[in-house]
Image (tube, helix red, strand yellow):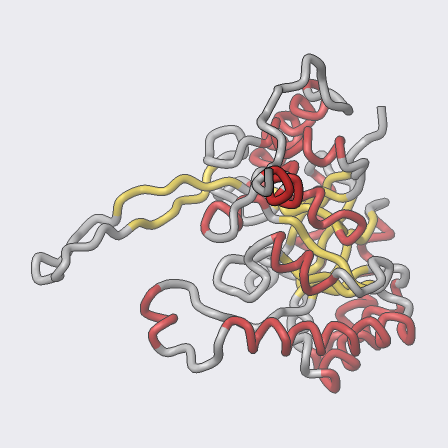
Length: 305
């Protein structure tokens, strides 16, 4: 059985822990890699050198780099790219345009969704040429609120882009907030553009207060982070989708629910490996006899008689 590889996303630690402290944390956890969150573009080259050296010294791998700015800001992307190219082959996450997180943000978004999709597609074509120049792969995360909230959207925007140049971070928990498609459908849509996976989980709970002056009265919800085996994402189904798609790459754990990430990662990796051992690698018979799609041309011909 092919093995998944596990990494820790460092964004939760990078503002209050040093590179050395983060590596020490990751070395104590049952992971093989680190997904490094970059801080400032001005110090990115020296930061990457230290990250690479300390990661190598701990006998870990670099699963990728994050936080490289907006995908259409090519001058800034070049600066980030020059920094991480010293670790190639690697991946570098860039940010798609933001659309709206909620109703209030949508009220003030002057750009149409379709205009932002076109803007993104145009930028991706240029990004693919940069990937060839620097020898790195750019990745976009499935993220609620952004133009890349849905696997369908990413499939549409990347269909003409070389998957060796630009890929997608599949985050099933983010799709619970916006853009949900059954994991099998999501993985089939992303296809070869599926670069790696972010693993976290969440539950939705009613907001604590309501405004009695709201007309009409509206429900408000908020989400809480939780362990991977307790939230709304079914990782058994996710692993079935990944295995059916032939994916066996990095699973990067992020956004921890407790103040003990090493213990939490150990629990979550153990659970994910149980999912890995449980699910099959192929579809199972007997197959469901769903109604066949209607052949509209045949219907039109039969209507003539």
